[in-house]
Length: 165
Image (cartoon, rainbow, N blue to C red):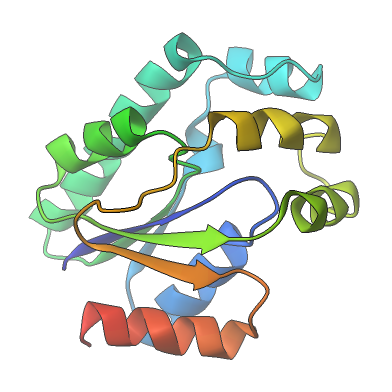
């Protein structure tokens, strides 16, 4: 697996886990939130959930970034909520054999984490909409589900074993 998506709802720890994996493996980190167009960021700041149309161009751009990294031979780790199967399929189309790590946690824990997360544009009021949109990646290829409340080092060990590094 040359590329991996760390996915889940807001507050599950995508950025923290991805950074730790990249530090351990030397993979390139692609922070999905950095690629949101300004319109998306403004909607989220205003507490308005994104819809499929808002996400389409963003997902295509993330797929391009992943594909570019893979072509250079550099392993890549992308943080992206990838809440719906069709979103994950957009990314899979860009990078065949793409792996996913689903950081699973409860709605209550996600809301608590987002409420106390400094400097992020996503308000805790949008956590409910993330859970409404979430389609669990059950039965999909190359997906590892990990409890997002596990200790970080344990999550990283599980992911590295999944990658077979």
